[in-house]
Image 1 (cartoon, rainbow over the protein chains, first blue to last red):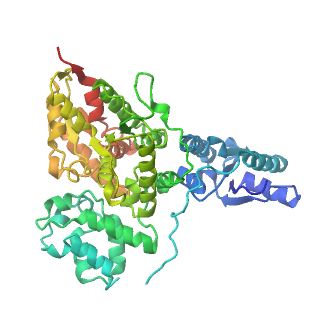
Image 2 (spheres, rainbow over the protein chains, first blue to last red):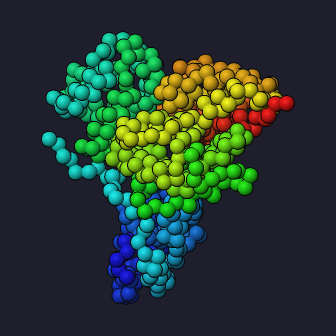
Length: 147
Length: 386
């Protein structure tokens, strides 16, 4: 364990509060996990999730608020719809839909959050490396090589 | 940029020095006419005479729709789309991929994901039991990105897989059991035309390996973009020895042999010429000839049709914006003005882009119109004569 490239996309509100509290309480959490904080999971679209895989992620987890807790309204709903579509795309690509997971938390559920992150890391470690890692990534501008 | 020999070469090879500054390109450019600050004529001028204006040139290169209407109008034979393609490839290699990618680049992302050599796709779910396909053999049907489009664009209810099914139905009707490969990849058209030549070539080589392994000698496809790419494949793979056939050409050839007729279809239709099929592959009459054989079908041409057909608003999934929408709305209104109740096209991209404009909630369905691929119209009506 620990070799996989994991990305958590974390909503700024309930899940981030859980993540913060779990870290303050020194709960064990996977070390190979990069956490990206966004204002709302509704900010994330299909392209951003796919791009994580394009850049070599082995697993992506979306940490969102409970449906009724969204500070803005539609966030988790957008998350569900995007995750369901991207999972189908990952299945077509042969990457496997299990590599994309979404989890929702209320603001006090720090134990649940830490546990599901550990379970997620174990699960992806069991699946092994993403079989479709592209050779190069050309999304971001590459370094200028002006003559 | 000034003094860059590679740009000099593109300008000279693509006949930009032949430009007369007559302005016919700009006068016909759909993007300019929709109000966008972009002018093919000015870009040609800046490339030749004011190459210091790098900001202008670099922006303009990514604005073009590459629909080739300007080329059609140009009296000097300037190969404008080809110049844009080469300039994009050049600029992308040095300064990174630019141009606002529609849908945040999700489509380009999955196309790049397909460059992984170890990919084992799971893409044959669309094949219904009534379709006869093989897993290896001489004649293959190239599906392209349709399985992906239908998931990604499920929100606008566009069904590009129906085109693939109807294409296979047409082939089956003609006693051809096509090979459909489980691991074919995207043809790479959109990566190529948005400047990512490196990954385009990677996809091309992987596809060629797949075809060779399955013993494919002839590749049949319905998508004009895939056809354009595979038709020029020798520029990437010099030893490319697979025959590339457009489905409607094959159907036309078989129909001409006789014995085939069409069931009546009492519809008034209009036809959207895709740029990759018409202006880039010179196919105008074949489609119309086939439609004229369907009894009851009355074809009413749009004001701008054939060589003058207007773009569906977007190409390669970059720069989809309010100006694209304007082009699409104008195009759909033109289609409605003909009095047709069915819009026929031959390109899944035209179908996606025009359907997207029809579904605009603020138009309250006023642009809605049934849209179908020519392959579907043919597959539904074709039958053996007595």
